[in-house]
Length: 240
Image 1 (cartoon, rainbow, N blue to C red):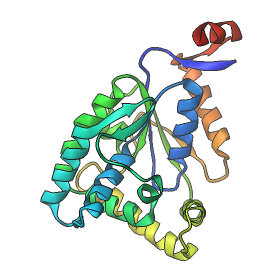
Image 2 (cartoon, helix red, strand yellow):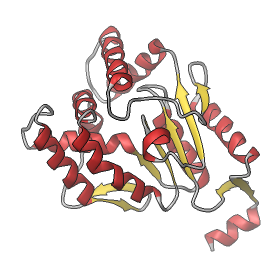
Image 3 (cartoon, rainbow, N blue to C red):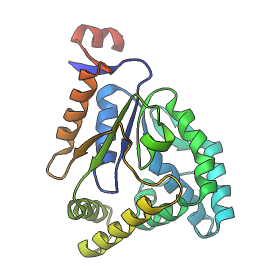
Image 4 (cartoon, rainbow, N blue to C red):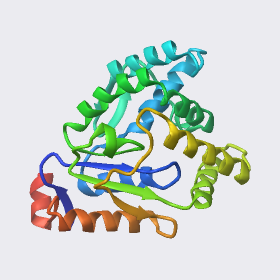
């Protein structure tokens, strides 16, 4: 048996870097057959656009122009995001340098203004969306909201392991300090800071596996009547 979402369900998952929200969102989207909207990827795409053009994240006009291009070119390719006429390397997109640049770009009001309508338009079909301001700014009327957190050291350890898998030689303490600085920037920015929505369910993932986090989310969604079990016969009917 598997799950299906009722209607065009929009699920918002927010939280700081390394809390596991990206993995949880991906697994939850797969479990429910919903597209995954990683809002942070749009800021990383903007940063990568600037890097490719040799421009700085401190150039607010260039950053805003890049964001408008991302907003114009982004579209759903199946259940994933793609950019028309621009090849996005997953490795470059997930690189630490791109992440640091994306964090700076995200503080620019004109960039957020350019990407906000795009995020809401992409979410209209129903989705699992993760980021730092989804439940508070992007989709304040989402049918379900979660705020995923974990201890700073555990979040740094996860990010360090991820970077090592990508081939980046970094020290754990370096990642920890960078994450501490990113937390301060994300929660302290004037525009759309990282914050828990009042109606979001908090899940501390410090000692939980990703599948355990998702199981908790599924149980909450089921209790609220937002998702339903799909029996084998119904699954076969859908596949047919």
